[in-house]
Structure formats: structure tokens, C-alpha cells
Image (cartoon, rainbow, N blue to C red; front, top):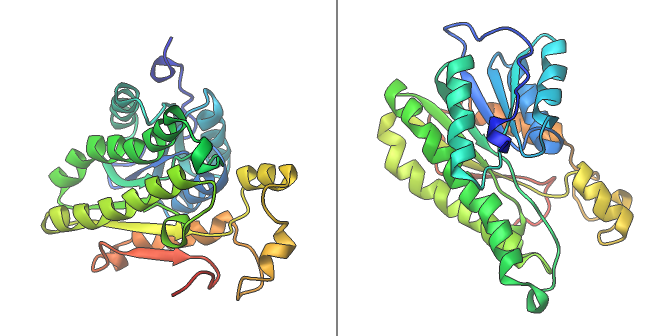
Length: 265
């Protein structure tokens, strides 16, 4: 059984006809889950896509328990067939897609001269091709409605560079370039496309790297951040909440850096 064929939990109720559907990839935990929780609070019916079987359903169940409309779907965004299958089920369960947040990503560390082609392709496949797969497969709904919001979750690594993460930085820079191209191509269709570029955000994956000693402690990082603290998922979710709102209809093709004032210039 492929990931896309795996059973899907369906907590909560079906979206009301007037309720917009937001798809968030990589939302079973970390920043993606914070975004899904915030958009559910904003009144969206959220469809969570996760790669590890069962995790998206568990995340959706937590949101539904809090009163939101949420469903979980298993799919590897690097696999177009799985993405297409998940989106077809989302449309059947919740309705046409109005908002897409491409957040799914991996961020391994590897010295460039020791990086294999397989490692390079894996990161680009999930982070950049996965964004392409999700956005392209969702866009017909947005075009038909004459309204839509697309937000790509990039990284400050694409703006300032990141040692031992050339594949990651390249993939995130590709997202920024894609944002510009899609904003121009689909602006007249009523669709905005923007990027959020986080930096120094405390997530489970960051905690693992910190425990392994490959990145500084949160306190040490905070010393170099003007606001005096590292970020949390809710900081990124707040930026996404604005960008997918009606109030952001004149904002497109932009990269919003959410980084506590770090790496500006």
C-alpha cells in the first residue's frame, strides 16, 4: 500500500460551503502544525498533509478537538501521484482548495565536498519539486474561483547562505524565485503568491540538531537576535495568517523575513 492509499482520519465536520479550504504540507508538527492551528482559528477548513503515515491524522484530530475543521492526509510531496491522490481526497472531503501553504521540507547538514548526488536530489525533490507538485496540482481550483492565496515557506538560509546546507539553501532560493514568477503569471487571476522566510525558529528538528551539538543553544542564538529571543511556530503562523487574508490582496511576489531582526541587509 502506498502512502497515498493509506487510511485517512476524518475528525471534525465537513467544511461549510462558504468556508475556504487551506492545504498545508509538512503540517504534522513544527512550523507547519502552528500554521494549520492558526488557520483553523481563522476559520479555514484545514487539510494537513504529512509524509509519515498517521501523523497528519493525529495533528488534524488535535485541531478538531479544539473545535476547528481539520483532516489529515498521508503523502510524500516529492511523489506527484501521491500529491494528486491526496488533493483529490481533500476536494471530495472538504471542497475546492483556496489556500496553499507549501511548508514540507527537510534540512540535513552535509559538507559540500562530501555531498552525494543522491543527497542533493533528495533535498531538492522534497523542498523544491515538492513545492512545484503541490502548487501546480492545487492551482486549477484557485484559478476557477478567481481568488487564491499561495504561501511558500522558505528560509533565511537562501538569503544569507548556510554552511553544510548548500542543497537546502538552493532549494529555498528556488522557492523565492518561484514566488516571483507565479505572482506575475497569476496576479490577474486574483491569486497572490508570497514567501515567508523564517530564521532561528525553535522546532523539533532544531531541537534534535541542538542536542547533537551541531547548532548553538537557544540562549546563545538569542544573543545575536535583536529582539532577544529565538522564534516560535506561532511567529511564522501569524505572518501566514496575514498573507492569506483578504487584507493582503495587494501583497504579492514578496518575501517576508520573520527573523527577529537577524540577517537584515
